[in-house]
Length: 113
Image 1 (cartoon, rainbow, N blue to C red):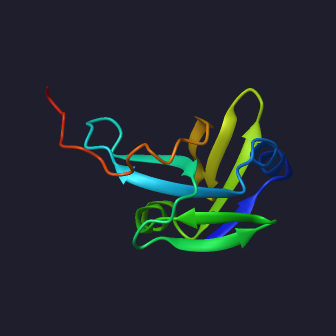
Image 2 (image 1 turned 120 degrees about the vertical axis):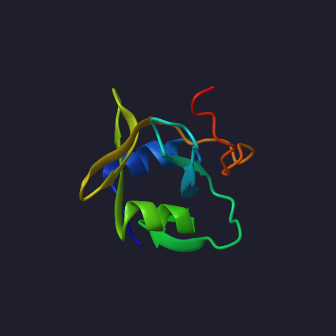
């Protein structure tokens, strides 16, 4: 995956000590949002890939690559937080770097409950 990080996102991440981040996607098993995209503290999990971008290490999972495509940009706008963007548009905004203790796997379907 080709990952780019804007200067604003780089500053935001660096100032908060996030030299290693993980871009991930997971199935939500929800009716309205089938896939959730997020940024997490950089812990490598089985099947992850790693790239260096502008002095930061970016890890991404197979699901992220499959769902996002081969090009992703991380941006930061103070009023919108971190954003994950693909050539097709914004995939996630109002993001913060999640703790690595938050599970990346989804649960069972809650549709219709």
